[in-house]
Image (tube, rainbow, N blue to C red; front, side, top):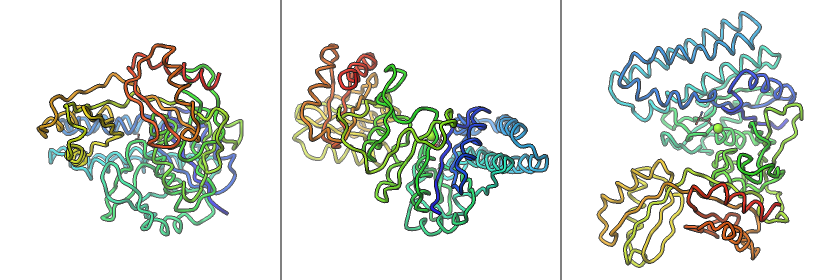
Length: 456
Ligand code: ASP
Ligand code: MG
C-alpha cells in the first residue's frame, strides 16, 4: 500500500487540545503513515534565543532544560496512561536534554557558536516532540516507531541552516527504511550532510522535510494539518469571510507561499511537483470532518472564473535602492552586488532595474546588512543608497493571469479608487503572479479593495 506522509506542525502542538486532536486525526486514517512532526509551538525560537544567552552565561542552561522538561512532562502525564511507558519516555527525555546540555556547554566553553552546533542544538525541538508524540500515539493504541533522519539516510547538500535534500543519496535508503506497513514518526526540520552532520532545512522547514520524505517513499499524498481552513482568497484577519480554495496548482501554491501565505513553506512544492504527489491541507480543529481536505494542491487545478484565486501579502519584505544617473546602462553593478550578497547569504527576492535606480527586494531582516555591504562596495556609479522598510508587498495569484488582459487594470483601478499609491509593480516574472509594493499603512485598504474587485 502506498504511504501517506502526514505533517503536524508547531501550531498543532500548542496545547493539550492540539495533542488530543492529533490523536483523533491519526486514528481516523486507520492505515500505515509516516508522520513528520515539528517542534512544539515556540520551542525552536526558544532554543535559538538561548544560543547567545548561554554563550554569555552557562548558568542559563539549567533553566532551559527545566522548562523543556516540564512542558514534556505535562503532556506525558496527561496523554500516556501506562506508567511503564511514562517512565520510559521521561527517562529518554532526560537523556536527550542532557545531550542538549552538553552541546550548549561546549559552545559556552569555546565561546563560539559553530554552524554545525547551532543546527544540532536547534534540531532538539523536533527530537523532543517526535519522542513524545510517538509514545502518546503508541499509548493510544496506535503503535508507532520513531525514526531519525540520520537513521533513514535523509541526506542534504550539507549547507548549514538552509540545506537542500539530495534525492540521489536519499531516495532508496529512506524508502527502504520506511517500507514496513506501520506508523513511523520522524522529527522534521533537518537532514544529514554527506559528512554526517545535522543540517537544518531552513526555518519553518519541516513542511519541506515532509515533502522530501513523501517524494522518497512515492507517497499517495502529503497531508499537512494546520489550524485554518486551508488556502483562502485572502487573510481572514483582513477580509471578512474569504473564499475557501479547494484546488490550487503547484505553481500557484508556491507563489502564494513565497509572497507571504503562512500556510505552507515555499519549498514544500519542489520535491512533489514533478511526481504529481498531491498536497492536502486539513484543519486540526475540525477532525470531525474526517480525512476530507480543505485544499488540494496538484497539477489539476483549472483557471478560475475570476482568474485570481488569492490575494496574499507580506510585511517581511524591504527595498534597497541603489540610485545614480546611469546605473541602468552601466555593466557590472548587479554582478558586484549580487556576488557580495551571495557571499553574505543575503537572499535577493527580486531585482527591478531602471536607468536611474536598481531596486532589490530583500527579506526585511537582511536590509541593514545589505545596506552596509552595498555601501562598502564603493560603487562609483551609485550616489545614493536608500532603504525602505515601511512597505507591504501584495501579490495576486492565479493561473491565467499572464494570458488574460484586463486583470491588472481591474486590480490597479481598485487601488486608484482608494487613492492608494503603488510604488513598484512586477508582472510576468511568474505567469501566475502579479505583485506590487505600497506603504504599509495602506495595506488593509488595498487588500480589501482588490478582494472586492475580484470576489464580491
Ligand atoms: N521548528 C522549526 C521552525 O520553527 C521547523 C518548523 O516548524 O517547520 O522553524
Ligand atoms: Mg511550520
